[in-house]
Image (cartoon, rainbow, N blue to C red; front, side):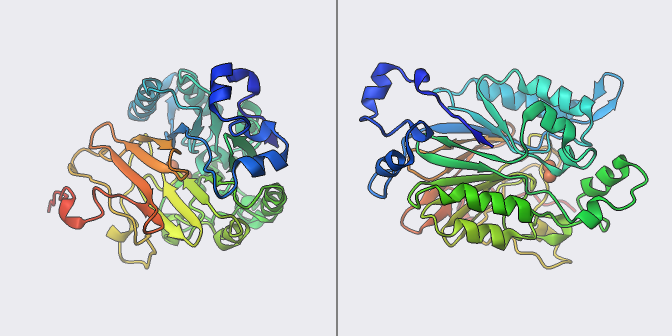
Amino acid sequence: MKQEEEPMKRLSRREFLKSTGVAMIGSALPLSMVKVAFGAERPAEDFHFGYISDSHIQHLGGTNFVRNWDRGLIRAVQEANLLTPKPDFFIYGGDLAQLGTKEEIDHGLEIMSKLRGKVRYVMGEHDYYLDLGEYWESKLGPQYYSFDHKGVHFVVLNSILTHDKWTFRAWPTPMDRMKAMARLDNPDGSPFLVGEKQRAWLKQDLEKIDKDVPIIVCSHSPLQKIFKGWNFWTDDAEQVQALLKPFNKVTVIYGHVHQIQYQQIGNISLHAVMATAWPWPYPKSYTQVKNALPVLTVPMNRADPFFERDASGWQFIDWKTGQADMHYQLPNNKDRTVAFNRKTGRPEDLKYQNPKTRIPPQEHF
Ligand SMILES: [Fe+2]
Ligand SMILES: [Fe+2]
């Protein structure tokens, strides 16, 4: 499940020379060379990549799809195509489809085909629970894999698996299973899992990586426990975190929550991405049930509560500091940046960290 990234032929001679020799070739080099190039004294090379997630393309029948969800993804693709300089690649963070049908996946991929650049996909629960990822996999390849890019080791996980006894119980139809998992506030759902098999694979995948090589893990559900009632939660998050603990610089980027969140857990910086479809409210606003919204998260500006898609968008991620600087692009609101602060050792939203500088949300009764 290893994918090759950025073959040498894509490097011009000038770029190659500029890279001071071996530093930028990443996985094309023997591991010992990667270690030399990206040891503690030398940060990985600057690059940026785009991240689009949670479009929830929804089929209404015939040739009809929910127009709003189409428009969100189309807009993200159009804006991402205008980025200068061009991102090295894109990651799609999961929930391309709403109910995992071929029509939805095909329609979503048709819109995504207009995006100029390579795209790697993460599995979301809305893509998965109809046919357990079969059609998605036939179009997009393995459900979990790793690749190297300019000195950074990327791992893509399928974090939305769950217990076999739930997945394979006697559902009337596969669509009943899909709908049971598709709801946000769902008493008949089941907590997400990376699972034992994939954790064993991850352990093996990471064994060959030097501890100074930065790791970026892309998952759909948060690899932390935020709010179980909405499945903003991965049941074996601690076990996955333990596998990442030996590395000096780890970043986890996840979708699913449709809102900006950021957190630092030990050596791991965690960032959520927005949806192109709709924003979820913060669980905190529903305080009937205990939740653990990361304390570092500064709420998104949803200045207009009557515009239901305020706070949806997409993001590009800048690696120039050797950590993920998340640039959130909100088509209908002010852009946001959550960057790693070396002084405090955690991601921060400098503009809005101070409550006094935030745009006050409107209240309505
Ligand atoms: Fe989603
Ligand atoms: Fe999701």
